[in-house]
Length: 199
Length: 199
Image (cartoon, rainbow over all chains, first blue to last red; front, side, top):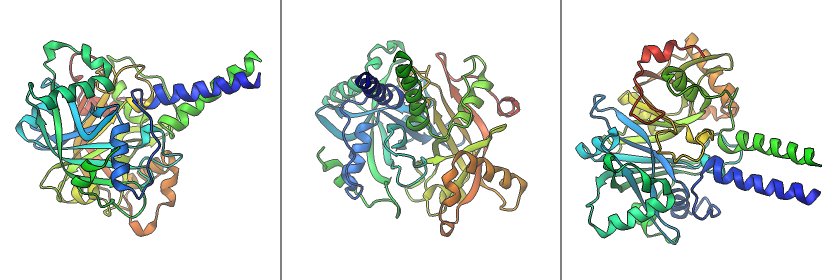
């Protein structure tokens, strides 16, 4: 009977990881060493399925406006580090971006469940902010085709979202990376180092 | 032996809720009806322990800069709906806010584990953005004392954070509420309705 409880334990851990925190992990992979800044940043982005996308609000006097969004940076065997989004102009984020491209995507390691007992604001629980320009992709480009596959693979229900809402694919053209994954302030990391890292 | 597995099941669900998604829930409470906009918004804020605080970046040409922060809106028997933060000017968010108060706090229901199988961007998985002014509190005020208790109760490790980092208490003076918790766009909800709601 011990073994039954053991399998029950394993199954529930599996359920917990799959359904509770991050339902759409493609391939869970162990986190890199904290000193490997590019590797850690790419791991955090590829393992996460959602974050907060901030734009400059047209409606609220130029205030920064954060919004919960899903994203994907690639498919199972090809992570690019570039976040792609499936947005509708029924939502303020896409409307804001079309008027002012300045934007940032922020992701916490906390919902991945890999921070142990650390508080979400504790620097050992990693956080990353990718700052840049949020741009609409040309609907007929090769990149759009790739991005759509990346999004629909990680977020299968997007395929069924209402056509009438006119969802379009946007990407964040990253210009700066702010990542904290330990004590001592943000890790030095250039966009080139981040993008060229192979995972 | 069935009952052993049952208790194992309950214990692991408990562990999952406590450690995986949201380690510092004070009193987990069921979510209100989705048509109760004020109740739902206050529930989401009081049940969450972290979010993304966006400010206008001094460093990156006025871009919106989202940052992962912990917060608290009260103590076990007194939720106020007002988010309080424990921030240091070693971090860009506090520095930005001292130059330009415009800010927003964004919270997703997703990490609470109460969205079922819905994607984080699906409107049935609630999201809230509180837009307003991020202000530093007077260190000697009554409100600061209350806010510190609220923060240290929900985030016990904050008590031990380095004195040398000069953490100070900030609050978001809410001016607008954007909440989606179902289809049909943001729920109409004034700041007065939100603040006066008793939970």
